[in-house]
Image (cartoon, rainbow, N blue to C red; front, side):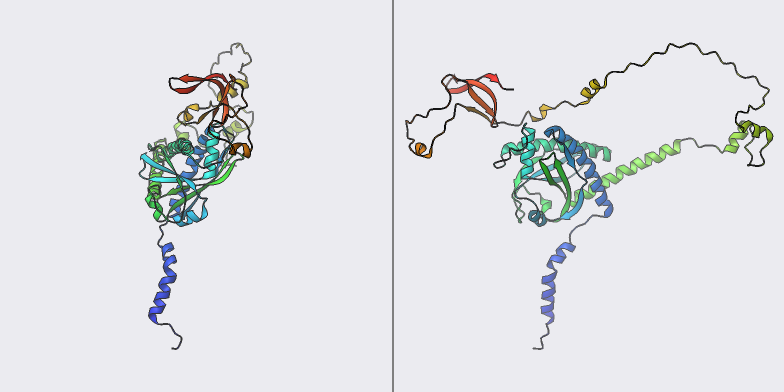
Length: 387
């Protein structure tokens, strides 16, 4: 052997080395105009969504300018936190398609805790159906307001169906009913930096199929083309200004002569304080009557400021389920005492007989009450509500 490779070996090496490159080259892409349009639409819609989220969590919400890129499921799985929450968004009117919002597990816990009146620090434990229900309602309000902004941009009605939230482990394999079909190939990734008070400084991602992104661009261009035609029609409907010479002839006034050749009468008329000679009488002007002038009265600004503050809309959270716990009492025991427990053991609590018991909602003390019997079950009669 002379050390040279055969043609079959060369082809095999080229095919092996080019697999990944061919995958990248074969990926779909958007034009620069399409990327700019998607970024502009996402920027405006997410700005509206941030305002809605502020009203839900009562915290300062900032969502920065989006970054439009291309991605695959493998890239998302390797770079994002695991597990995370997928928010599926489907359009009912105006647009045909769907997109996905990805939130980190910790961010979902903080948002839902703030929505239920907490301070955003109660994030222990795993994600439950309560968290998913609350974040679905929040995304329904946010993306509903975002759809309203898109409606204004596209000049057509755009509606979404109620979003659904699912926990996804984000492994490298693309499987399961919760994963959209377009995630099996390449897709458009729009990334935002989301800041909520001092609690969240994270990345929010929105994933688009290429077909949906191109359709959104076409709708955006069509709406802007119609708006441009309206502006042209408005401008053409305005009366054209006649040349100054023609206006001067219609008014029997000579056009002004160039500097240095100005007639005397016109020159005198243009001098400061000069009154041109005329043989016509000055028009009669009625004398000005005395008018009663009084200082204006304005309402104090404090009342206006109070009216401008939007009221909190508690109706948004009426369907969120909460866990109610009734605590009869507590005590402390050593491990030895607990190991000695047996059927019939009596445990003395730290509460006296007849003393009101505590009612807790999601672990927070809200009321006091007394135990009652309702047919064959125990109940609680609330006697005091804490402030």
